[in-house]
Length: 565
Figure (cartoon, rainbow, N blue to C red):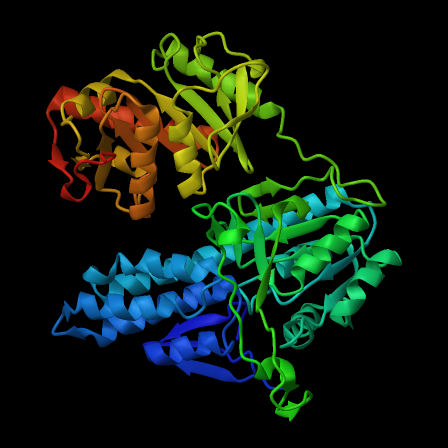
C-alpha cells in the first residue's frame, strides 16, 4: 500500500488492519456499515482523522445499500450515519466527517463518495501543511542543531489517511536533517507507539528509540528531550487538548522542565463549539485491555480497572496547537515552569497590521470603504487582528488595529482602540472556516442588488448564472453562484450568529456573503484572495444590474425568522 492508508476499491474500503502490526501487514476490506463500525471500535482503524474518513466511507456504503431503483431511503441512511458517528465519542473528526457527507445523501451514493474522496485528498494536503508549519515552529523554539524529540501514541499515515501530523512533522524535520533521534513512548495499554510508531519511523528511515511511558519524565530531566510532539483527537475553543491517555502527564513534565510541548492536528480536529475540555466525553475501554495483553492474563481475575482511552491536557500547558493554518493556539508559557525558562512568545506578525492598513486605504480610494465604513481582519492563530472602530479607512495605520479572540470576539490588545462593530461577523467566519483573512466592504452594486431581496426576518439567496467571473468566487460550480443574503439586524451580534449558523449548516457554501443594505463579506487564505473574491462579487452584481442578465432571488424556507426568539 502507498502513503495513503485508506483506499476505495469497487464498493469497499480497503485499509491496513492495525491490530496485526508490526509483525503482520494484512489488508482489511470493509463492505458493510457494521464492518466499518466494528473496525473503528476494535482499533483496526484508529487515529482521529483516519476514523473520520473511514466513517464517511461508511456513509457511502450505507447510501449504496439503501438505494433501490435510483431512489435513496434517506431516513435509513441517516440512521446508519448516526450509528457510525457514535462509534467513538471523544474524537471530533468522526462526527465532523459524517456530518459533512450526510448532506450529500439525497443526491445518491456517487455524490457521497465524491465528497468523501475530496476529504481524503484534503487530508493529505492539510497534514503536510500542518506538519510543515509545526516543523518551522519547532526549529524556531529549539536550539539550531539536530533535535531529540519525544512523541506519544501514533500520528502518522496510519492515524490519518496520508503523511501524518506529529509524525508528519518528524518526517519534515528529518528531511531537513534536523532530527538526531526520536524517543517513542510505548503508549499503554495497547502499545500504539511500540507497534505502530516504531514501524512507521523505521519505514521512513528516522532514527528512534522505544521507551516505557513512565520513563518519559526522567528522559526530560536527564536532558534527552528537546521537544514533545503529539497529535490530538479534539481541541476545544480554549485550547484544551484531548489525546491518547498519558499526554497530560507529558505536558506537566514538559512544563516543569521548560520543554516546548507542541500539538499538531488538522483544523477538523478543533471543536470550537466546545468551550473547554471539561465538556469532552472521555471514552473508557474494556478492562481486558489492562488486565492482560495478547491473550495472556497479567492481573488477578475480577480485578477492577480504570481504563480511559484519552486524557485532556489544559491549553495553558500547551506551547502551541498547530494546524494547516499555522499556530492557532498558544498556551500560557509564563506560569508553572519550575526550572528552565518558558518557550519564547509567539506574538502576531507585525506586518499584518501594515498589510491591513494598506488594503483599507486602497479600498477607500475605490469608494468601497467610504468614511469609517467597512473592516478587514487577518487571523493570527486563536486571535484575529481587525481594524479599529470609528476610524477613516483612508487614514489607517498599523497602530489602528485591535487583536480579538476568535472564540468570543473579545478584545485582548489594541492601543486603546475598540474593534470594529462588525468584528462578530469576522469571528463567525473564523470559527466555521479555515480562513486566514476577511474583508467586509460596501461596494455600490452588490449593496443595492442585495437590498432588493430584503425581507424582514428572512434569509434570501442571490442566484447568478452564466458568467465567467463566477469561478473567481472560489466555488465548485463555475456556472452558478448562490450567494446568501442576510437580514441587516440592528444588533451586529445577531447578524454574526445568523452567519455562523448558516456556515455550520452549509459546509459547501461559497466564501462570500451579502448583508442586505450592509455590503459584502468575503474571506480567503490571505488578504489578496479575500479582496479578489469581494471584487468578483461586486463585478458580477454590476453586470447583472447594468445588463439585466440572469439573476434571481429566492427566500430560504429553511432559514425563516433567523435570529428570532
